Length: 287
Image (cartoon, rainbow, N blue to C red; front, side):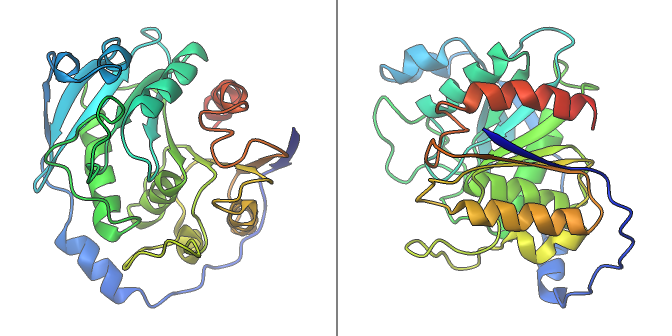
């Protein structure tokens, strides 16, 4: 593993003023409204195998937003453990989400995994249904707003309230996490793994998608940690390195870690996942 750590900068350059008036108006129109949650103790029991077995070790809750509803899984490592909110990518909410959660719990985190969209065609036994959630649309302003509302609801949970929290995203989930910090001025440390951060995917462009590099001067996170794999053929590692460099140039505290192998999910659910989850503890404690 090659690790590049960017220290605090004294760069006082003023941010450029981008003409994002239309976007900001749309965000105001969908401003955060009251969020409620409730326990869903029988959720896992209704799933087909093997999803049922994978889900059964988690505490399940339903989160109701003004225009949609979502499921979230939680597993508590210890009463004083920091909290990681894990935001999945375009592959959706399912067994892989539970696998990643277990990796982070083993590293000493209390973990919450919310769904941010419902899979259009669920894979029986693999996907965790999220009925009531929006259909997948990518990194849109609406998805960013939903994520912000979801995290507001999660913060009210007694197991989470008042704890140190990091928001961790993978692929398009990483894009949403960065955009939330930029467009909603959220200050939690963020960890962006193999993120879609600067440009569309050549073979999967979606209408209305936003990319964090365009808003980098609005980053509000107390620290930014960017992880990539050089052999990633889904999202080029150059997206991560460009975003990390741009964030550092604004004076932010940035850590950029690049692995030389592991493909797209190598640092999320692959060979480097455990080391990233462990390193993240020190990143967040010192944020």
